[in-house]
Image (cartoon, rainbow, N blue to C red; front, side):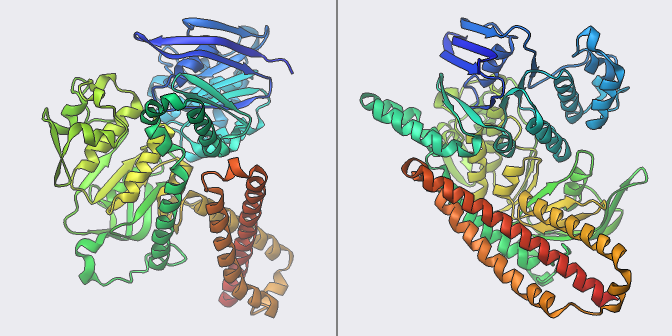
Length: 596
């Protein structure tokens, strides 16, 4: 199939040096590519060149005549438009403009099409940009960090749209889950060069490791130089799987401890004596409620947070996540109920506004106030050495904050926050603007942190890798706590909805039989006893298969074995989900029968 777009021998400078050089890309009509690479490698610049909005200093761009290209930039600006409708319609040619199309896609994305774009939140602006991108029905879709500022419902909408999209796609995103679900090929921009794979992002780690191994073998005479340049890439790719397995084992231990602390309904079990609150207890909420302007935000919620817990808070934009964090940390007073805080809490708050960073300060000044050393949790460290731990080059020590990328500013905030003696860290959407290596670094820092973490995030993969439990807004409008990460909560929620739907259907069809029955059958009772044991065996099998897939050389050593193990893992995960759904259905039936 002939390509619809080609970029040949492209190069582009940043200052005196080339960001990249000799880049050639061919895009076919159904290509679904993710463009990955560390911050500062030129991914966004390259996407602008492909979109035709930036002229490359070298090379040639060719687009097949009649091909429609839609480009979603990272920071869109719609201040020139009077309302949402006009902003959406302006993405169409004059003969295509129809108000009902704008209204339809605005409704899908829950946008008020009469609203002024200047009044929209960050999430609203991003949804408007997506509406403009998709309404034009392009042949090629170019997306630069489309999930920034989006909540989970909007991310789910985007994921489904991308899966059903019939054209070609190139996407830059830090959202691993989105890339895994939508990509079928990889463009890896690494130190000015482009590598391409014909497999989706879920295989990136294994493939990237083989690329680097081959590169090192082909450049033996430059080995020492390459070793220095690849230091963090090796940590972020070759060693990533081993580190991840260690972190995951530690996280599973935390989840096991949390499972013992909370009841199946998500209510606090309150098993620890009040006398142990000093140091051990971080916060205890008892039946708290909060309303604004008569609208309930939090209603009758209880939980207990202990030292070392990693709590993820998930919900749609405007659902009350920030209010809940404020209640749990004592910054907001509840209308009803009470919150008891532990003693000696030292809190660090990392948010996306980056209010603590002054543009004219240097990187070193942010940490040390102009000195050569920084106090890191009671120990003196040289600023340059400490900054290396956060992926900064010593040459950046005197760079002004205003010259840093968004991801670099986030890393600097992390370095500052974790240098302090803190035992409670609040992370408010920390993954925006971060590349994969920096996300790995943040996971590593949090894994080594022995305090407590409250994480507000829409990044599903990051939640899975970091938190021991999630507090989520359910379909009934109440907040509840669930052991595990985002995927555990999503699986549990889907199983519960499915069981409720089956039970509702069964009740409608056979009301008389249900009333006559007072207990489960022998077969059902036996299944209720055996299912937890069977689920435990499957969980162990899933863990073993995941560890096997995480072996650094497995894919390169045995591609067929890797594929078989991947299929076995998917089958075991599906079996676990089926058994969980069966158990929930039987448990709900048992409770109803006992109630009657």
